Length: 162
Image (cartoon, rainbow, N blue to C red; front, side):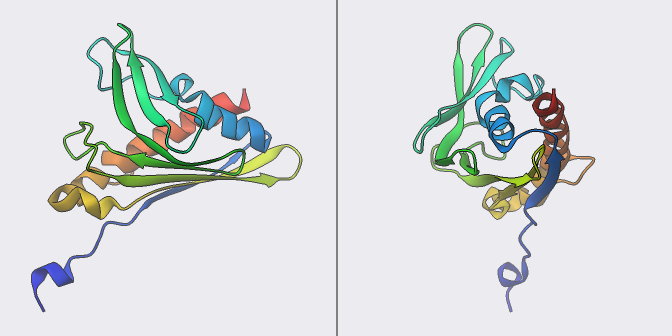
């Protein structure tokens, strides 16, 4: 057996939150107000981040707007099924630059939990596509994408519950 066949793909990043918000509000906060909870330090624009936009349709763009009005694309919308599900193509490679030929997948599902709560299931998968950098990019709770998504989702929950 060769070494390539023995390589184990990095696990997807999975998070589950119980958000004190209706399913519609939970979806709208994630998909329509990402700029209100995204870490400003996680930006590709030199002028600093003003907003993060997910265009509300399959085929729409996922991008950030800088304080100077510049735009940097992050990916695209694969499925927009409000208020149930959002599927995004993350097209930032291991060097954190947009690559239209690169894609990992971010899926977020919103399930009602009683009248006042929503279960938000988050998964960032296909991390093996980062190639030799996959494990380092994924990281764990303290480093890499896993910890980044953890903090982003804490921020998201705070905004959604406000």
